Image (cartoon, rainbow, N blue to C red; front, side, top):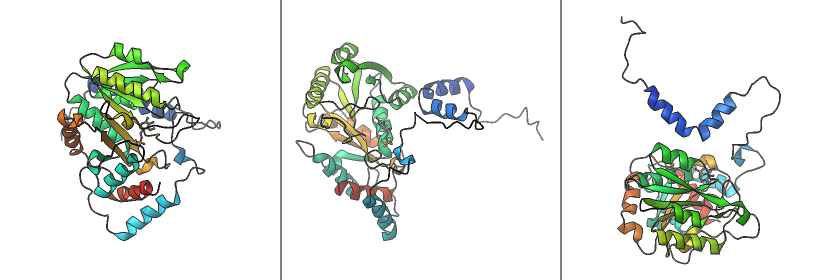
Length: 311
Ligand SMILES: Cc1ncc(COP(=O)(O)O)c(C=O)c1O
């Protein structure tokens, strides 16, 4: 038999490439995991995982009984053991459309909704679409939720940061946005309500963001995973309200509002009453990307339908 040390395998990781990959994710979850792994297990002091934003890990946060009942009912019905269609179950897509329509001045249809594995997969899908635009760059908030940057870097999308201004309640520095954008800028990402700042943007400021994006000819990606979790006196307004000024891709999920991040149910919605996303090929590209992934469980999609309808 061949000497084990000399044997060449076809699946050896190229260390240079692997290091690049590690560097990309270093800013995000990987860093937190390796930090936690390096904690001395024999040290009796308790560790508070400050990088961990999952309330479901604490017994005092429990989802609604209607959610739990819906899961049990869908399992017992035996009607949802099938594969789900590529863009999501029609009833789940309809439920998300109706849920979002409560706050919009126009109506989304089920066809404007794509069901994803949590909001995270919705981020992955839209950023993958951006990679198909050629040498595009995107504008990300600083501070922001680091997954956008990690995913963008891994997929060779150029990232440009604009500041959120603490002295103005963490509003977007719109002058900086205008200065950063060029002919290759494809999109701006807005996280509202904001992670990590916790603020909620006003109607007037969201409108200004929409007008700026229109002037620059760029898409707005509105991460509304914390939608309706608004503290303070500013009401939560979805960015889709301004869809007739600028096309808006809304990303959301049930993870935060229903305290079930492990259920992995989210959506991507195209708010585009003027049909710009269809004409520019973005809708076709979203559909193509969704064809190459597995998607959320059919059971969860049914349960989610009950949650949103009962809200
Ligand atoms: C701003 C933001 N977007 C998206 C997500 C991911 O959401 P989900 O758990 O539904 O994938 C998170 C999770 O913390 C987040 O903070």
